[in-house]
Amino acid sequence: MKTAIVCGAGGFIGGHLVKRLKQEGYWVRGVDLKNNEYSSSIADEFILGDLRDPVVCLNLFDRKINEVYQLAADMGGAGYIFSGNHDADVMHNSALCNINMIKCSQNFGVDKIFYSSSACMYPEYNQLDPDNPKCSEDSAYPAAPDSEYGWEKLFSERLYMSYQRNYNLQVRIARFHNIFGPEGTWDGGKEKAPAALCRKIAKAKDGEAIEIWGDGNQTRSFLYIDECIEGIRKLMNSEFSGPVNLGSEEMVSINQFVDMIAKIANKRILKNHIEGPLGVRGRNSDNALIFEKLKWKPSQSLEIGLANTYFWIQDQIFSNK
Ligand code: NAD
Image: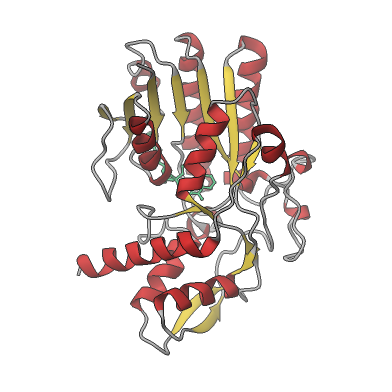
């Protein structure tokens, strides 16, 4: 039986990944600072532990571990990442998790390690035009991410790649582009735009206005969680190390995105544009490389995943009342 450690198993993507690895017959050890908020983990073991502590990391390797999935990070949506108030913590906390886990993976002879990077590492200067952002993998340098979160991701990508070069540790790196879906954080300050907008619309009455940060003309693409997990597994099972984009190419403006959710909710929703932390002006995944290397790319329409997510958040709101 193959064995895997999922770091960040109490989080959104890590939680879904544990379920997938269990379905595939893995023995799974999850680790996180916290339990998953929305479902109890089906990992064979779930360790509540802080990956900034090297001893906690060391103790995870008491048996042969085939694969490590390093998803733990101090992260959140624009309200968390772009406010500037969490920069030191984001860099310090996430870098320590990565430094400790890659070192232990090398020391204990792990077969492969997956690292979740982010589209936030791409340079801001290529993402100023909302209609024509450039995020091909080879456009990463000269580096100029617009957040410390993006700089830490870039540093850690290089950290993982240097272990592969110097120690021949097999590394796989994906750059996620806005992953969304059920069981993602939807309130409390760390939620990302899809969950925040679903929550606002679920709480709004028909004909009411919701607040939107910026003019709503900023563009993004959003990838549904199931396709993200599929991409992680395909990359891990391939000979390709990456870094490679894992995102959707269906780019929408935030205003269009709100209209899509309002249609799903069957409500008339007005838009009140206010100031707020925004991030880059435009961003879209470029899937040429993933398709070339894996003969696969995400293909599900945004609307399908969005409906699942909206109704899950609506249930959360009304069952918590
Ligand atoms: P998440 O916040 O739901 O999960 C991250 C988990 O890491 C959390 O449960 C958190 O408690 C845990 N963690 C943080 N610090 C830790 C520590 N010191 N020790 C142990 N656990 C710790 O986020 P997510 O959306 O599931 O993201 C997973 C990974 O994917 C992260 O590395 C994130 O940067 C990356 N990513 C996510 C997106 C996205 O759209 N969700 C986009 C790009 C990159």
